[in-house]
Length: 179
Image: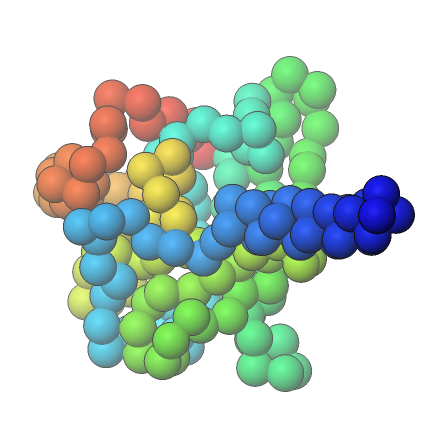
């Protein structure tokens, strides 16, 4: 009887643990946020400068941060993040992959730098020329303001901050990145 219990308990426990890990790395979108519709991924490709972000361990102590998006041969999006760690005094780079969660005309993607773990990448505001973007993660712990230039006009900064606040973000926690 004990062996039967162990044979059942171990796989069930591992399954529950696996589901918890996958759920913690989900490609969600914060409640109240909506991904941009009629999204044109080709216009979004290229180099973006990180203007502001919430601090988290993968970008800790980093300035001059950029993200460059290009198309992989299989149709997914190649993500190359690069930044200067001013504490360790060295450049760091990571390469990942992004896929659309739903249709390609909805700016709701999932991104992975450590497969099989994926997280949400949701463009929730974007100017019509694809020069400035507000990107939400899977929850209210992740937020980025991006620009094709090393700065962002005050009107877009204000617009994005107001949009982020309306979703529930505490924008006072944003780190303004030195470019």
